[in-house]
Length: 444
Image (cartoon, rainbow, N blue to C red):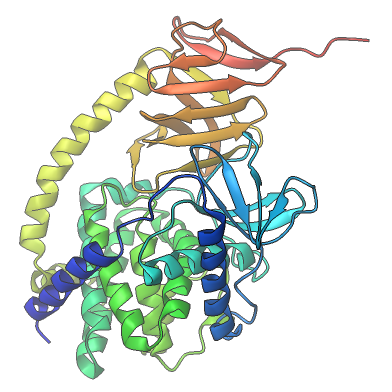
């Protein structure tokens, strides 16, 4: 099957998803009756799966929460008495010190699947989302909880080019059969291996996020599909949409994870039982299909890249990279060299836009939107916050210096911080900087 034919199918798939799955239900505060219907939908999909995918039921304690009002509608009672029964559901308000995101959380004595309201209007897209998040609730029990730190190398020119070539080859493999599929899989694995050879440590970081988020998206697609062709279409759509996201450093696994999962499902390997948090889905597929990698990796990667439109892709990415450097310089001036407020990290929880991450080499990663909670209080940053890193460890958060250090709540350029008692704002080590410090405990 030609690459041109595959691209035409991808274009049709993009049109389909934009037409049917992007719209979200109207209204902000979760409607109890509508929420009850969505809970029933999630339960029905999980019942249809019958625990066959992972050996455990996916559906369980679930709540919908509106980020603006923090209003909650849940499918069961909590044990801490924070929810009250209303018809078929339970309602309440999520405390301010709990981050809101599509994820799983421990709250009021229950381990919940959390989904932000409103949900997609399209029933199938809604099912994929709910099952994705239901997987996160059972992920630790399955022994598959992995790191979800950003893969900053995927914001570089070479990282993006070779990732997109891998995606294109995976899409070709999904819509091909027999020898054509094996060739496309081999191409994807060659592009993947070449990219990883350019960035030390990339393999482990990418593998972890594909296990953490890629498997969740694979689960959402697999159990929501009524037949294999529908799952393949969803995965191809994901690969078609993925290149258009502004950042790949945290979002890439949503495209590659389902693709590898479905290709492994079609292989002779019983692969899910062999998974660990360190598993490499690409290596598993290589083994399943008995694919031999070339001795001269770079030469083969460059040779095969031409069949996937590499020349035009690289030209587009060179232009994008120039714009990226300008944006990175602006963030560096605002959050590194300019006056900042430094927040320490103790037991942080945070929610963010996975498509809006910008790496700053040698410093950390800028999150275009961030809601963070720690012992010092709650931060909402709408115009960018820098999470600093030391290796794989988060060391702190930087935001522009506050307008008035004595004001409460604290405010600055695009952010608000509600401090908890016992915390103060003190001058930082550089002139113009500030840092949060915990007030010393009073002696009795």
